[in-house]
Length: 321
Image 1 (cartoon, helix red, strand yellow):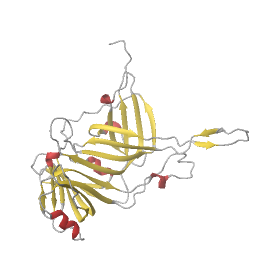
Image 2: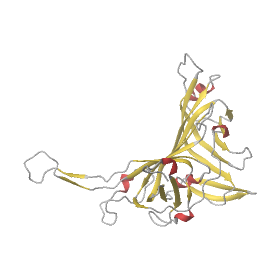
Image 3: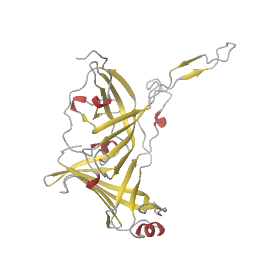
């Protein structure tokens, strides 16, 4: 053991979660799991301090502050190794297709919430337990890799909010992840029934348009905490960047109608079809598809799109999400 001071380093952190039995209640962390690979949490937490400007003093100073609405929003980014995170945006029904387990996600009028343990490990651990967490939206991002590093992994960025937090020093014992993450090379995008191979990068956003301030109340039971989340309109949108070899995407944009045929996004880890996520879009519309001039490079375009709905099905060896 050295004589210098031990500092907290993010490499030693671990984020784990477990579904709650009701909002901000239940969920045994020892039954939980690590969120994903390379988890990074960026909090924007606030005590919502309320000012008192004057209590009668003859000066220009703020006279005092008291804590106000507690707010615990954060972004959690990670490399997914399965599709369990989608159950915090959708209802999920587990099934079986032969020896393969299936998980079908559908839009519901209520949400699953989770308990989060954010462990900053140290000789004296700093462990934050956050209850009443919900996902407002999540963006799945991918980009091609052109060399060594970690750019080629698919990543998920979840926009989340917690109700309340507490701190401790005990880290729950859980198994480390042994599965590999999903990568750019496992993607197949099909539009207008045609596989598009020349995809450089892209993203899909799943949003339930939740505003946590809709759940802030004048109520002594909640005190300065928020209540249950209220999902509003469900929206799907995204962007795919593609190298162009003809005018096909201009034609799809110029038509001014939803793209016909099959429109899907597939992430297949082993190529067998038994370890994958398939998103089948309905009423798929390209909103921007006209390429700019690229004098010193290949002509490419950001195809900005929306879909009114989608069928989302995962296939893997996990019995229940």
